[in-house]
Image (tube, rainbow, N blue to C red; front, top):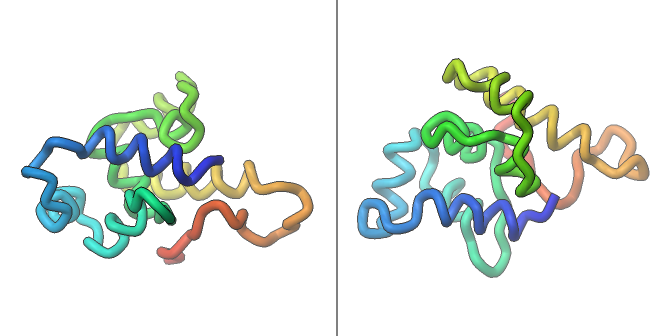
Length: 117
């Protein structure tokens, strides 16, 4: 997973809304503004699970597309019911499944899972 690509896809979805005011967008997504800023930073993005899940639910996008840029009907259907907890779990699982084997049980370095609940 390419964190720059993820940030670009998020920026594409939220761009042009609320005059680009990330505080307002974060409020609408029900995420912390700092998490949103970290997730969309153009130079050094660090997408967070809560932002990814909120984007999936708010915009109705496929989580696989958000994470990889490729559409997957199965994952899209899986989160289509709008359950926030399910969306977060799906995003976490996808990130962990795509972790390089050399990292063992560690989370992949490309993304930071900041909201471990």
